[in-house]
Every structure is written in structure tokens, then in C-alpha cells.
Amino acid sequence: MNGVSKVSPGVGTGLSKPVAAALSIVDCDFHPFVPLQEVIARMPARARRSVQVSSYAAVLGREHNRFLIPTGEPLRLDAVPTRGGLAGSDPAFAVADYLDRWGIAAAVMMPIQAMGVIAWAAEEVVNSYLAAMNDLFLEMWHAEDPRFKMLISVSPHDPDAAVREIERLADKPGVVGFQIPMGEIGLGSSAMFKVYAAAAHFGLPLVLHPNSVDCSLQNSPSCAGRVTRSYAEHHVLLSQPGQGAATQLVMSGALERFPTMRVVLAEFGFSWVGPMMWRMDTAWQRGGGADGLLPRPPSEYLLNQLRFTTQPYDEPGNPRDLVPILDSMQAHRTLVFSSDYPHWDTDRPDVVLRRLPVELRERVAKQTAMETFGTRLGL
Amino acid sequence: MDNDRVRAGVVDEFVLNRFRVVDTPAGAIGVVRTTDGFYAVLNRCPHMGAPVCVGTDLTTSTVASRPFEYRLAHEDRVVRCPWHRWEFRVDTGESIGNTTKARLLRFPVIVEGAEVFVQYRAARGAAARVKETPQ
Picture 1 (cartoon, chains in turn red, orange):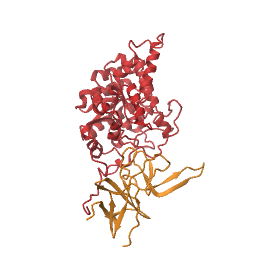
Picture 2: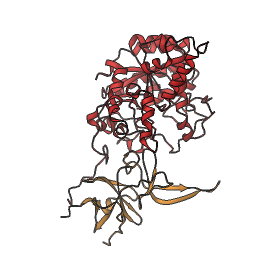
Picture 3: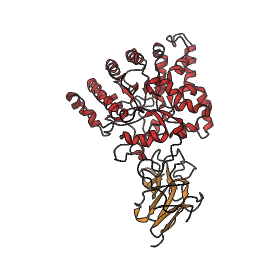
Picture 4: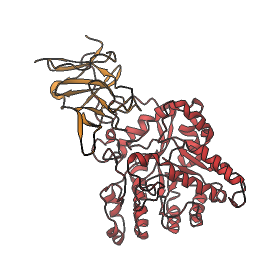
């Protein structure tokens, strides 16, 4: 075979052929970037003056107490676009490097850059920044390839502004849901109900994701256990804000009040879901004021309305240890695939799906996500 | 014609400590030139299948040390995965810091004159490093 080998350039270098293509996957946690200079340029002049660039200019956070990423940057080194720039900043490259390679039928875009606003105090600056960013994601990513699906980022500080942004964009092609950085207002607070009502009106699922209250981008992190000192601590404790969000949404009666609302908890882990559901039901059974809001057991709301993503996939020494855990959360209806591409702690689609019991793979890869996002996915 | 090897390029095309990835019937293999010769490993991290030779040059690791003591090790012989940053020795394929018992799969490299070949049928335990032949 002398002389017939091929040195693979650029995209596709050395990775195996798209073995997962036949699976047709919906990725519920995909992280693209847009150029922030362009976002800022679209903001009103007064608001633009208030935008401060932090040391980590890719996100515009003010993460004074943030744990350090041990690798220096949180992105995959092999996913840097051929023309340079951040991994995840070039739509055409991401199409070839990720969508086409793994048979991704839809990638739900979770814009980490929007999370920085959790620490911004000027509400109008937040609103115009998110609006400009939302527009740019639609123009730059969804327009490049309709498989890139849009989450509308809305203000975590101002429910009225969140409703306005949902109303402005909900009917745009490519929009599949909305996301809100967690922290300012409890998800079970009645202040959020107008946001949930708007989302229910348009049939938009809510997708929640770390990078705000979890000691990432908020000035005074409130993660239990105090400020996480290291990436390792932060990674282990990612379940905390997810548990808080799930508990609030269920036990406050928010899901009872909005029975069509679906919420995807992305990147908080999933192996805690079953036991937490047991505890919710036990507490609910005690009555006597422990919970007066729910006519049915909390587990019913959780199973019907909350979804959890695979990444970061738990990796026990014996993979079979996960089976009873998956059973306990009824993973055939609650677990959806996510990659976290292009982050360095990504999960490879075919590897994760093969680690699941056979009967779950199709459900996790696609079916449950299609039921969650509905016809908006266009699949 | 030798059916168990694939040409990886000519010696001068290799940037020191930077992999060139070649497709072979055994899968994609990264071939790298170091100051003491060539090495080749399968371009697949044993953890999650990441392209372990892409996006990162051979590097140096730190090993366990006492406070205020910084001990570098395996200078320019460390393959660091571009995803979860697991580290392996390019010469033995072993995990650094006992992260895993799994190893990188290694292949012998043959240098004939200016031409570099990788033997893709080589056994896992075969010597992975060869000296460059004098030109």
C-alpha cells in the first residue's frame, strides 16, 4: 500500500467514519458562539457603553470567584475551526465536524455567552444584549444549517422583559424553546408564572443549564458547599442546582399550574433523579403542610414534565451499575441525549448511546427529545 | 509492495512533536517525530474514543510533588487528549498518573531514507519506536 495512504487535512482528521449516522440523534445541549463585538454593535448606544468585557471575553462574565479550568480553556482542542477562532464559533465547521459526522438531526443551541448576564445589574442592558444575541444566533447558525435549533435566551432579572422576548421570537423558524440563566428569581416563584404562561402559550419548552448560580458567572456564588474551589468540585456539584431547580418546579406547583410545560435540565447529571423523586413522594405523603399545593404525587409531575440530559454521563467502574439507576428514573421517558460539544468534557455520541441498555438507545437518541420539543424540531 | 504498512510522509514534513494523522486499514494512526525518533499511536483515546492526536502536540506532564515543588516529567513525550485531557506516554502508551489501565495502541514506524511508514498490523506490545535511519 506504499504511496496510497491519505494524510487527512482539517475537518475529519482521523476520527472514525460516521458510524452513528444511522441513529439520527437529537442533541439537547450544543454550545455555539457568536462574535460578541457584533452583538455589542447591535445594542443601543447607551446600553453598549455599559457592557464591560471581562478577562474571559468569550462570555462577558464577571466571574471573580470562578473556579479555574485546569486545562486553561474549556473547549475541545480538536474542534478549533480550520480558519481559527474558538471551537464552536464557525457554523460551517461545526456542520462537518459534528452534525454530519455523528448523524445529528437537530442540535439544540444553548448559548453560554448569554449566561454572563446573571451578574449584570442594568436590566435594560441585559435585555438589549440578549435580544441582539438571539437575533445573531438565528442569523448566523440556524440560517447556516436548519439543524441548528434555537433557544431564546431571556432575562433572569425581569419577567416582563422575558415575556416580551419570547413573544418577539417564538414564531421564528428554528426556535424550539427558551432558556433562562438560573439564580435571581426562584423557578417556583409566582414572579415566573407570566414567563411560563407565555411559553405554554407558544408551546416552548424551558431548557435549564449550569453557568450561572452554580459558581460560574455570578459574583456571589450560592452553590451549597460555598464557592467551588476547583473544576473537580464544580463538576461533582453540578447536580446541586439541577436538584434545586427540579425540586422548586415540582414542589412549588409550577408544573401543576402549567401542565403542558416541559423543562429540560441540561448538564446537571441524571443519576440523582430517581432517589430524589422517591424523597419528594415521601415528603408529599406526609401532608400536614409539608406540601399543600399538589393534588398528585410529585413524581407524576417530574416524570411527565421534566427531562434530563446524558452529559456528563456517569462512568461507574461497572457500567451495569447504572441500570437500576436508569430504571429508577424511568429513563425511557425522562432521559435525552446531549454532547456538550465543543466543550472539553464532551461525550461522544456513539460511545454514550452504546453504554445504554439496547431498549433505551432509540428513545434517548431521538424519540423522547422529539416528544419534548414537538413539531418545532421539524423531524 | 508491503501490505502491512502505510506511508506517513517524508521526514522533513514532520514538525517536531506534532502528529500527522494517516488513514490505515487499522484506523487512523498518529505519527510523530521527536528528538529521539518517531512514534505512532492509534488516534483514539481509550476513554471515549476522542481523536487523541489532533489539536495538541506532544507535551510535558507534572507528577506528584510536595508543596512549592514543581516536578515536570516525560518532557515532550506526553500525548494529552484534546477532550478530557487524559495523559499517556507516547513511547509506552501507558496512562500517566494511573488514570486508567488502558493504553494507547502503538505501532512501529519505519524510516527508509526520507520516507516514513507506519506498520498498522503491529501487535499492541510491539516496540513502537525506531531510530531514524541515517540518510
